[in-house]
Image 1 (tube, rainbow, N blue to C red):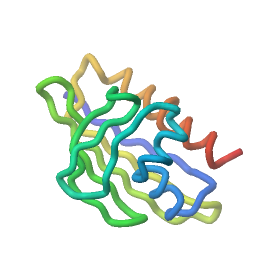
Image 2: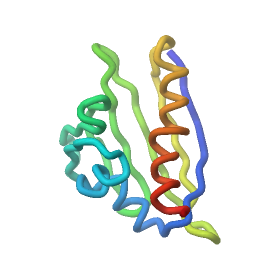
Image 3: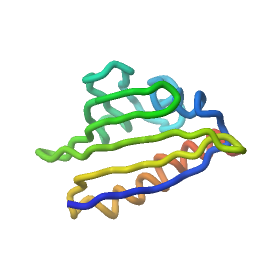
Image 4: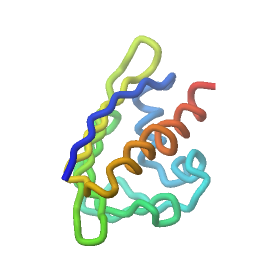
Length: 124
């Protein structure tokens, strides 16, 4: 099992970033796919038409999202921290317990699909 820690910057306020990550309508806008998401602790979620499924663990509005992502029988903990930055927000991602065979795909997914799409939404 592996761990990822990555950092991103977005030209958007922490409030706008948090909204884009937790509001199912906004998630559907930047992913272009069906999403189900509620900001209720212990609620299930799905994104990219069920390509990512899991459970929401904890929220601190505009600051923190903790989730479990499910890989068959494995659970991978995802922590997203949002910090104010001079030009918007800086985001720290930590994902733990990633199956070895999924690691490269997950790294690319964070860069291209997840934060690539958010950057396109906010940075242009």
